[in-house]
Length: 392
Image (tube, rainbow, N blue to C red; front, side, top):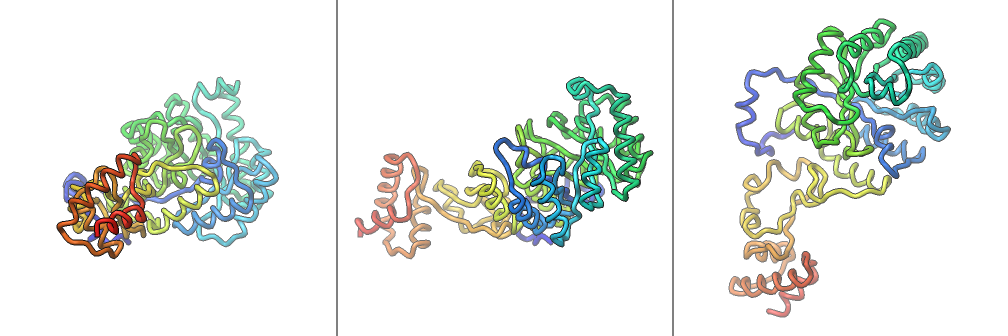
């Protein structure tokens, strides 16, 4: 549970949310399948197993181990993950094709997402009619359920589908044995309001007992907001990845959504926030990508301060930060550069154990700014130590 004394968001959210039901939120991780679709990402079986264990340690409820028909390596990885004794449920992924589902059955998995395109643009691109895709869905889902697979039907490009066909397809999947459904914003085009609308529509169509998933992408930077809207509208499961890794603008970012739900909405997600920065760092090493230093949750500069006016308030974290760095198990720090102030010099001296008089602070600050302008960047601690030595 989150220590609420370390969350400094004020009372506005509580006032705005008063009287609204507090929903439950669970996470379905697809880093190993949809995340690997990021350009240039390619995980070998050992890396996939490592990532699965890492994600399991974060506290997600379900892990999509992969799509077995991609390659023999993927089959090997899925088999290893299924045998790894993870706390999370291990799910497979399949297109609405009997041969795809057979590959999931062969691996002994008990859970599977079965996907099919349901928007007219997707159907046209694949040269498949509505009648043909319905036939494929019925056959694939029936085959899966007959072989003991718990199915979540996943309508690709749900948010651009004709609403009447959307309803027809999802009811058809449930009629032949699907137990859950996923509303899918494949191209990230839905506003949070549209997500609320569509989840509400789906709930009306399938009834109160069918779990609804929401799978979103971040093409317009709305994936986190839309995921929160989906939970508020009655979705049970949010699909996403570590860091939002994925193709185009990426997937919904599980740690980012969890931080918002936990700290701003007071919803227990089961995610261990103290582990997400290390998980992000390791995934970046494996997949070989970088992040903006100001990125929420995992950015390296979240708790680092350069500006003098902010450094002057550094002793009161709640004055300059919305939550405590300890919630993410990461340190706070002061760096020196062009924008530093007198408080920055004092704090850095304390941090490095350097003795200097108050009268020397203006001189040291002038030297720091001079060097920072020359470098067009920050000073290293070693450079600052040399400045202090020069000025006694």
